[in-house]
Length: 289
Image 1 (cartoon, helix red, strand yellow):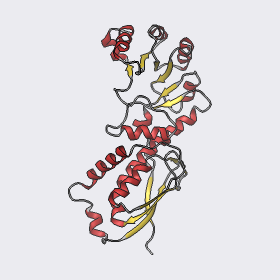
Image 2 (cartoon, one colour):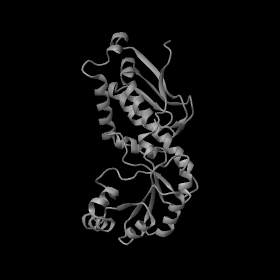
Image 3 (spheres, rainbow, N blue to C red):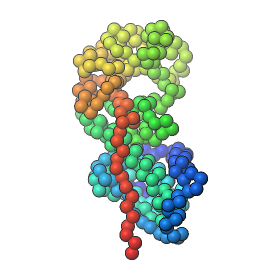
Image 4 (cartoon, helix red, strand yellow):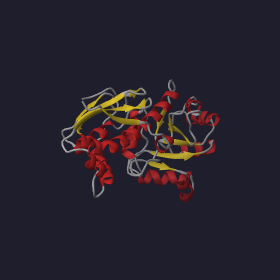
């Protein structure tokens, strides 16, 4: 059953592998010895997944898959889907099935749901902070190894936009690339010769002289690194629409509005994925009648 929310869907192959790996890690060689020791086989249970704090939901697919991996006949009713807002105490989903299966899958389901909803919640706060400007909030590659697809999905659920997914899908020339290549011009020349016509090229710059030098080589985007709002505004004016402008470095909820008001196109925020607090979500069983 589809619930409220507007976030995109993850491919089933990604969801199923992530859940399978997490369950295997949790169950180990002996399975859930607590549940099997205390719960009689065939016992049925039902309950609700509820938020302890207000936030934005992400990861509901993974939660559902966790329960249904252990009990294929489990019932899972989505009340608030990915991208939907939940209030403190609000019900996100209802679940019913074999009691042992629900208990075995509980932590895996909640780990994914809490972690991803935390990212979506923080992203939504950044997006709200720049509302009314042209700037879009984007993520970075500062993700948990093995969980990048899930974390970038959560950013989208919070209203953010994904930057490049990995090293393979765009050229991003950073300061160390420039040093090793021998300068901005050499780096951009080689990047253009190497990359195909479908590959975007972005380069990091730190001052107006570097902006001017980079623009001679027509990059697709400029990463304006650790610039003050005044310098960002001057850089945007200098670029004058000839490249996409991305502000990056030390962005916080307190500073993001001033950055957005400089006229930059994008604001990248590593904290979305590396520092978002988990949204507190729990599974509460209904009392047995």
